[in-house]
Length: 101
Image (tube, rainbow, N blue to C red; front, side, top):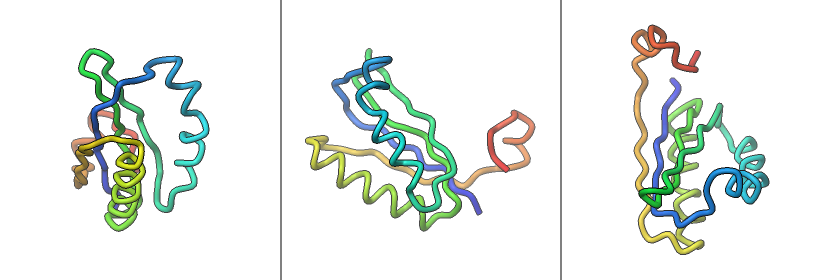
């Protein structure tokens, strides 16, 4: 059953178009992560936060990605990574046109 992963962390930028240009290689590599269906990139320059919302095929894939991504961010100097894996209420999500199958 598909799982949603929500991740956020303190991030000092870049943001917007500059972030898109700087991280295109990372974005492309995420498509190769086992079980990953899609990602929505999140950012808040005002709050100095970065992160993402991911849809994974299953809990094991989401957990493995969260562990790998947390370690990668910590190597980049990010002190705290907040990650949570959620179940999806498909009937209600379908009513609101959520991008899941």
